[in-house]
Length: 130
Image (tube, rainbow, N blue to C red; front, side):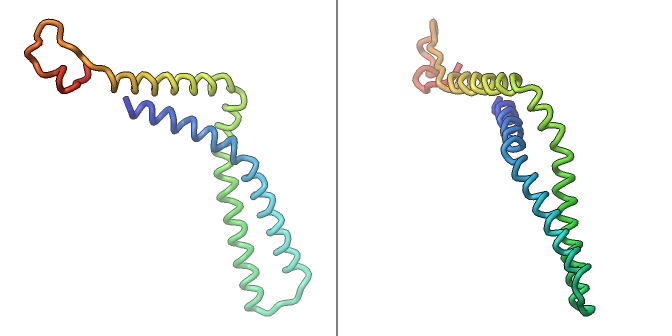
């Protein structure tokens, strides 16, 4: 049962990460777009030699690749973000279910079986679960 508890916990952590990080991803995307504009204005408004032009082009390419990677990540996770926003009660219910699952698992680990008839067996002495 530990896998099911772990999967539920991981799903909730994923939802929390998306909710918590979304704003910083938007901020990062804005910064990357401003950096792109800086590079484009540098290319547009200054004179440069071939080496400097190559470096500017390479920096622009790397900036655009970072932007693309972040946008693709946000595009995929947007579905879960919207799902979470429109199903807040489900998330609360999942937390309650996870808590119950964890308490049940803990209780099961502490359970002991005491033989009713066969007192000659050693199960009770070993503290075996039942």
